[in-house]
Image (cartoon, rainbow, N blue to C red; front, side, top):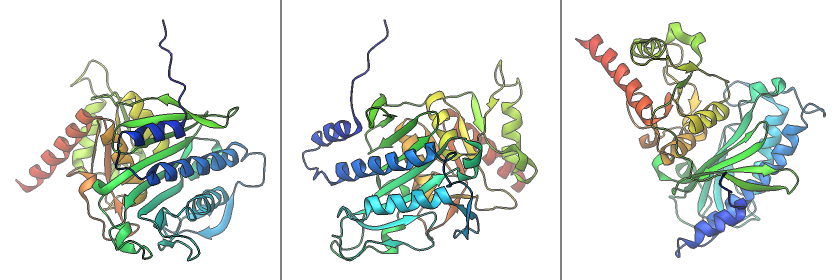
Length: 341
């Protein structure tokens, strides 16, 4: 007999989690609720993107020199408008904005910091492929009551108090952690509520999927080349791993989180620091995956222990099932040791 799932809304789940911590002020619960509201607004636009004049480029470039699509900026603006007036944040930062985003003076200054990628995988918008929003929350380190500063945004990922993503696909899901496990909620379009669909997500210790853009193979480190060839062989298992790469980090990581496997966006000869942004993509996804029992690495160390020096700093990332991450680290280390022998 199929086990019945609890009828649990996102808001109720957040409130129940808050009761487990008598010292909680309710602020984190409220801001997570506001992020849920912003996600609903973005989801509505994403779902009708093919029907209205919202697809295509704005004609502008973001701080990374990439063309900005209209839906990117819609998501960026919605998140700022949803989050800047609640009195919970002292500063925000977005992948689409070169500098930190100050809270308007007319609003109360709070104790939290919000970093976000408004629409990850946006190059897939026109092809109707799953895309998503990624967010990361910290407590400020500068004095309370004052406007937040760059220092508040440049914290190591191990200082996150919450992180999550919203994936806009065949259904809209919000997956988040506040440091006590990972939970997923699916948006019911009839009720207009996020309902608990994936309680206490645990990623398998070992997967059978690897996700990487193999078109960059010639530019990889030798250790990574060796690892991928190993996965494709019968040397270590009766069946080789499956290659599954969407090109949208949220979609690739979400699938691997549920099924097990490894997402890789490495450093290479052309991009020695990698291409993904540490504060907007790597840290929040690393926090989620580690909370689900997985690991997140640069290939040579833990992602969450990096102390960022720049707002848009980049990092290589190896993210997913624990045994898979440990194995790719072993291949990378052995290749580096061989170079120095």
